[in-house]
Amino acid sequence: MKDEQKKLKAWGLRITPQRLAILDVLRGNRTHPSVEKIYEEIVRKYPTLSMATVYNTLSKLVKGRGIQELDIDPKKRRFDPCTSPHHHFYCQTCGEVYDIDYDTAFVPNMKRIGGHKIETIQVNFRGKCKACSKK
Amino acid sequence: MKDEQKKLKAWGLRITPQRLAILDVLRGNRTHPSVEKIYEEIVRKYPTLSMATVYNTLSKLVKGRGIQELDIDPKKRRFDPCTSPHHHFYCQTCGEVYDIDYDTAFVPNMKRIGGHKIETIQVNFRGKCKACSKK
DNA sequence: GTATCTGCAAATGTTTTGCACTCCA
DNA sequence: TGGAGTGCAAAACATTTGCAGATAC
View (spheres, each protein chain N blue to C red):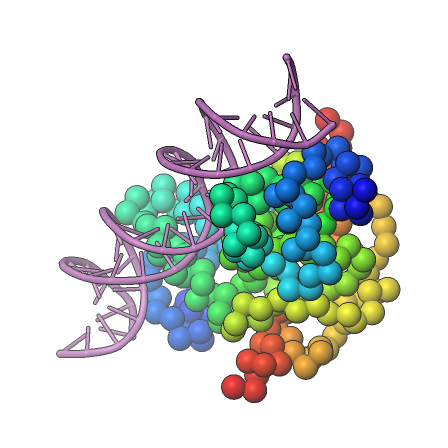
């Protein structure tokens, strides 16, 4: 049984062609794709795929901690299959999201803060990206 | 001339009753209000106020760096009149946003990263808040 | 007087929901 | 076979836009 099938099983999700295709698009993907981007990529092979299925599956993956949902893009949901700690940069000019591999040790490593239980921490940089600065 | 009127002038914005009312709601406000919350509070006094005006003014204030726009709430835009550095906590159960006054010195103080020009940095904590944990 | 601002209504774009049908386990 | 998953369409929601009339300066 393939890696991806095992993952779905571990998260208590049924194995379907649509879900395998979504995991396939996400594997090693560093473009922080939106729902639409993922949909577009798969719909070529599965013309009947619906956005609802993509939304549904992504939400379940996020809940099961299989992937990370980013809060950096104010316009749409974006997903990152890379769950190891790193930061993100959002270009306010072109809307692109970049990985920032700057040291993550500075982020406090705590279970609670001010009485609140911490599940995730995201560090978001915003500004003008390298490419847009040149123009 | 009042403080708020000076501010508007400094940002090159005309002084209107609507804008003064918006600044009034924001002053010292630590609830990270959404557009709707701000609208609701003012519309009682100015029944003809429109959402478009609130959106328009808030966008200009953000652009002029008069207030901060938070990226912590995936469902809607939220605003913070406090521009001094601090973090935020988002409760995934109740949707409330809390200030986190934990040390901010750990956040890197850089103008550029990976060739990108940095304008703002936000640190977002997520999880279950104190109140919801008790339930 | 004129450019900016406001308010309304319509449009846009993303995400969610309801439901009948399908298919995995 | 039963319950979970899918696809479609409609609904919901936040936000943006276009424009005519009002207002600040």
